Image 1 (tube, rainbow, N blue to C red):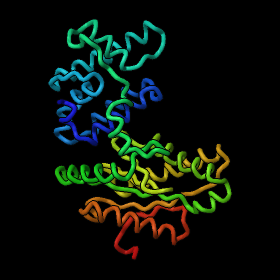
Image 2 (image 1 turned 90 degrees about the horizontal axis):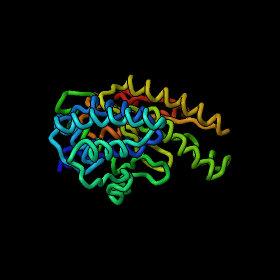
Image 3 (image 1 turned 120 degrees about the vertical axis):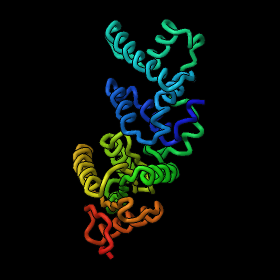
Image 4 (image 1 turned 60 degrees about the vertical axis):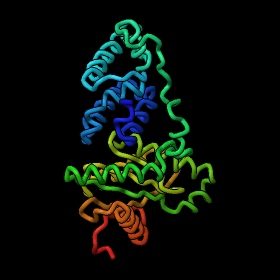
Length: 286
């Protein structure tokens, strides 16, 4: 099936965007295009639109045909929105396009994306925050390592830990602590790029995979996250800070497991240096 010609990582990112369609509005199509443009794996690139349309309709097309269908689906979507005077879902546009202008979809089977492989999705999703879990991160890290090796690219990972979580729970209660964790996940998710991967690493820790990003780029990204988090928490009446450790492939190591260990060590240094700071790994830290 065309769906299986794309990697599981890309497929999960597509599903993630499709699940966010209603919240993204018109930006949904920009996010899909952004994901396509950021896809550098040759196989994923060559099967991107055929995989996307298969996810939405279970129809199989060669990539060039699928790409042309997607272009016309977008045109139909805009046309229908203008005629109806309101925004409609991409699923509605696909059914209309294939049913009335194409004989390919004689029996529409477009299903809500969140129903696809629900049992499989649950294995990789953190229930509290809705972001991926560490099990998914390990697979994404392996995939990105292979891609970086193939194309001679750099990437970074960042481990984020909420400072003094026990004190926060004591001050705001368990509900306040959970609100903090959910808020941090949401802030990261809203500010990351389509190609970035955020996962819950532990109780109050998150780990982020940042493709084609150096340490300096990762620091800039995390600095923005810290500012956005402060703004979001201020509205909720919660005071909290985060500490972050960063490592870079292949500068620090070419071993993905060691890369995580080095980011964790950098996080440890951030903690002992006073917390509320970002530390990028280098061999002189120890």
